[in-house]
Amino acid sequence: MVQKYEIDRLDIKIINYLRENARMPFTDLAKKLNVSAGTIHQRYEKLREAGVITGSSIKVNYAGLGHAVTVLLGIHLHNAKDVDSVIDKLSKIDEVVEANYTTGNFALIIKAKVKDIEHFHDFLRHKLQAIPEIRSTESFISLKQVIDKDISLDANT
Image 1 (cartoon, rainbow, N blue to C red):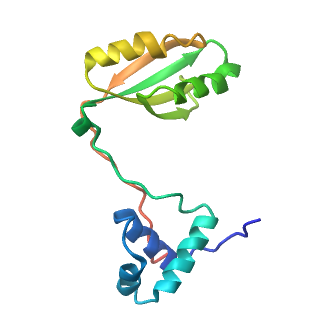
Image 2 (image 1 turned 90 degrees about the horizontal axis):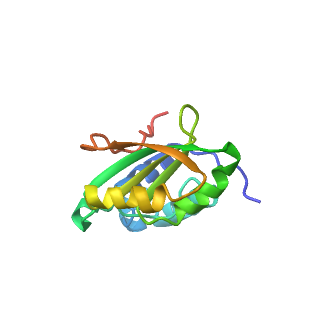
């Protein structure tokens, strides 16, 4: 069992640097923070074990890969008890990159990446609306993503 780990200012600084460059060597990070590489390694492992840090990743420019259109879709279900089944089916659709179980008008709000409007139409008709538990959808085509950031973590608090 993992014990609760108390996050301190050094941990926040480590997280902030690694968010900027997840591939930064621990020795470089240690120099920037004026601690040993062993301290960075130990803190990193504790943050990972506590579930604060999960993996490492890169950001993909989907438009550069030909998927230039982002669509947000609100999904109404025939029956709320079908949500787990629908989530399972959505997870198997390549275009669906994010799904959120929500309060409000929609049971789910998903984000899909498609090549163009024709691809979106095909995705909507043959994949999304082919899921029998989905009663209806409402689409919102993103004209431009204007904010894409992580929440601010202040190392001084």
